[in-house]
Length: 115
Length: 115
DNA sequence: TAAATATACATAGCAGGGGGAGATATAGCG
DNA sequence: CGCTATATCTCCCCCTGCTATGTATATTTA
Image (cartoon, rainbow over all chains, first blue to last red; front, side, top):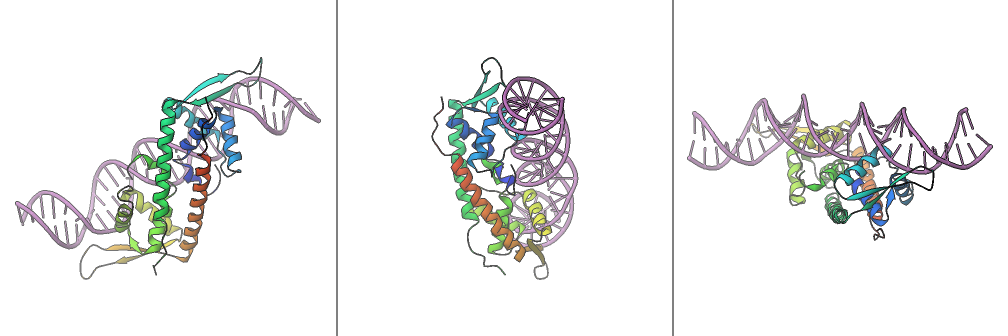
């Protein structure tokens, strides 16, 4: 992704990707475009970031892949869909995310009384 | 820090530390304890994580340090306080955080229509 | 006195994840 | 043919938080 909050993506990328796939099964290239469109260009994922995430998720049993070869010819796509295991993982990641947001939001609030 | 959301800390640590110092000037060891107490033990920062952050913030001109030598004897403390530059940076980081939270929260919602 | 614990700062080296950049391949357009 | 879009894959770099350790002071405990 581009921009100043580059580091923020860390720890949330797996959650984001799993959420996208949970909504509708899709393939790498489309996941990148989906994220780009739904964030109005604020998150532009790179292949070098996404594919390793997909492999990790698949290795962990959270998603499954199937190759789709379009009629006769065309570029084959590797579709991913979420597994029951992945749904549990997604629920867990969502909870962790919301908990962490509450924690940090509380931490960074409060006026300065320093001098 | 400990726990599953280890990676989430990344990108927010600078924001958290700067927030603590903005509220009240303090020193490394106390910052660790402040964070631990205010998060009820959920974020236990390590020295190896904190000190480099403090040095980065100081190099960037966001905070200033002053050594305090307690009366006669005692362990000297290095107090940090936020600079005007740091207050701008803090405002910026807070904004980025809130924006990113909105972005991700929107992204990861939505029911699954997959099969 | 000695050992253990808490306070307090510093740093070398490691691990893991996201990015940059390029390779590979298909396909449409001028 | 070159350019662009689609689509996947992979090597290597960089950054950041963690592990581990070293240094030093002070208090408690035996």
